[in-house]
Length: 405
Image 1 (tube, rainbow, N blue to C red):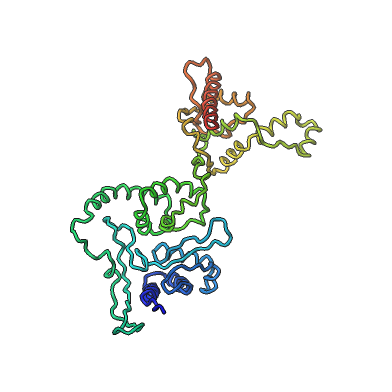
Image 2: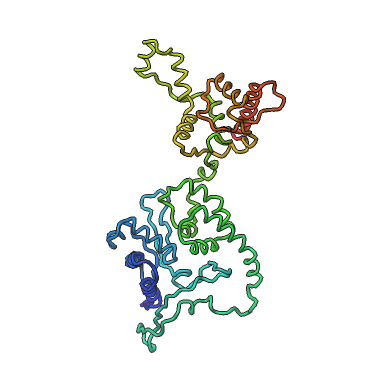
């Protein structure tokens, strides 16, 4: 018969003992001790649903999830998904971990303040158990050791220069890695920055590049309530959760009212056929019968108000002083727009151009409005506005055709 794995048992016990003596919040320790009830003797994989942890702890679901995230961020558990995306039976898999290493004492590939792959020191001491006096299965406590004293990381290398060349290269790259992390974390701003930094340096160069490229798409795709601590996001490579169609979608940003992007987006929308639904109400029909307004005039007014839903939305947001968020794809095509004063002849020519085309004009324009640059040598402001508009629409039409091809 096989002997029981007393060393494995001591590892699981030591983990629970260390959790109790850690500086974790009391509720986090409660959640971890409850989770430990579902683990095997080695602290290995378990798959309890959150509802079961809620029942066992007496806490609500939101609190359990919050403290599981704290424990994961601080390195006390590793959380992965068990099952396939979209399957109803998919659950989280939990494995006990030491901060900076796993239960076997394996050193984690993380970085601290001055480089080098040394995990952060732990204040926790571990009670080790060894066989007593040659008896089979008889155990005794022999020493309470500091965790770092039993790690392979503390065994000196055979050569004092071992890994020196690699260390120099890592230090040379560290400034760029640190700078990239600072810029990335500024877009996330959730979770402990030191834990996030360690998780960042544990990634490969390819993973950091991939993270930088896909995080903006993740932030657009995920609900704000679903955003986790930065270290958790990095360790689990959650940027890979984003559907590819979200990643390849054009970036979006805020367009300032009557600014370049705002005006370019507006002109592009107006150049297309009106798609808004025009409805004459019973009251409208009564006004027409009573001779208060002609049918043609009323239809023209409603078309100006509702014919282009995007333009109507932009107008309504401007009235409420709320931001208008749109695609940034037009930025290269509005770069040469010029400011036009609202009291100038050229601005009046743009207003006339809108009237001739049956387009609504800008409501309550500011002192200066960005519009397509007027060409040199035009005979009149009206001709200049017409040529500038046609040039802009031609440029974005060619871009649309190129994208379609």
